[in-house]
Length: 291
Ligand code: ADP
Ligand code: MG
Image 1 (cartoon, rainbow, N blue to C red):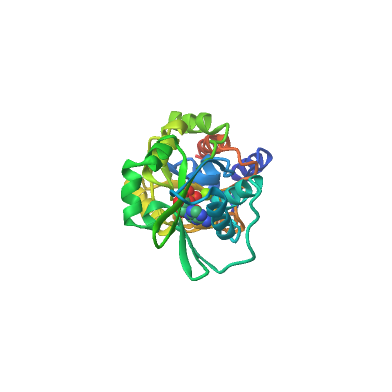
Image 2 (spheres, helix red, strand yellow; image 1 turned 90 degrees about the horizontal axis):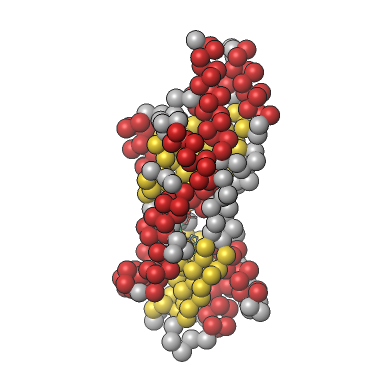
């Protein structure tokens, strides 16, 4: 049975836009020692924009952008939407539907006129490209906190697009207030090491783990749970759902995908990260009343 104090606190939380799917989740919340955050759509607004676009020598921008946007227009990934919009703004209209294969956490494989194209991160598009990434232009872009996306064909890199996402305006304050409560903060992201480092520093997080696949997020959570026992996970995407289910407290952004909202124990209705520390204080206060 649910304690009257719990009921009152759940209801207070709901008034402030924190939806607890049951009193037990509010009871757990005050004991969290660590909170892990997804990057895109959680710490950031999830609406990246293309800031830079480069092509291979002798490849015209319009041609590369046509191929790239024809592929990305088939996907509803935030990066894909940004690239499709960028193409439209530059007067490039994607071709008729082409066959693509979505490779979650990596990118997209596509076949156009018998040529295989890969779109995604350096790990996905190939080893030589990843090598170039270490020294070249892409590294400079990543050090600016941008996500770098490669388009490759059988001859190598066709184009590089850099995209910048912005931190949610309350992110820095929200993270600081969690640290003030003694909570260790971590970012788990599918993005590359360099970009992750810049964003984690901007947000003021204690640490970060980059290049996570959905299953890596789960593995990392399990490692954190071994060490800290009580660990929260905040996310918005389909790729976060397994981690949300694994965490002591799964927290979904209100604008997240249906799967994230269904899997989570707690929903931040207004996407306001500051509500996490509010809810922790609420839970701790309630635990004092109950005891
Ligand atoms: P996150 O954990 O940051 O939300 P994802 O797991 O969705 O990210 O994606 C991880 C990485 O895979 C992206 O940073 C990007 O490099 C690559 N990627 C995934 N989907 C796409 C796509 N449609 N187009 C280009 N790159 C993609
Ligand atoms: Mg996300």
